[in-house]
Length: 194
Image (cartoon, rainbow, N blue to C red):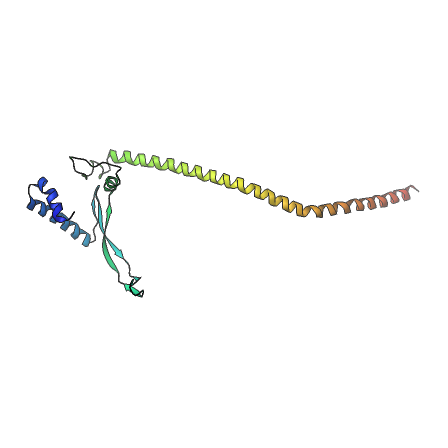
């Protein structure tokens, strides 16, 4: 849809083609002037327009492949609002005889009760997701601990197997020392008796 088709689409609702053309021109002019001045233009349910700074950078010429310096510049950016995204995605249906993007609900901009209820619901949802992720993390830690425990046992068995021959050798030597010690003690005891 181009500008002329847009004017034709709203001409019936505004009472004539000239009035529709003036309305489109005035709205677009106001948006452009605000964005050029560095302001953010936000239309609830539709989206927001803003000025974005791009730093200087290097790029490549696709034809020659040489490196080219690109100057710092400012560009306009449009971000679609959640209502617009939902309509495009198909999660919400377009109203047949009503305006697709309505003005903000009463109290939503001033922080009324509806906003507080929505905030409370979001906070509760965040808590439940936080609990779920914490539960997942603890289960993952337990699973890793279970996997790591057998590995520790096998390394303990390996080190025990390496140390075992040394213990056996010392065990063999110890009885020999004991018997020699017993013999000397027995000799001393018999010498005392005499």
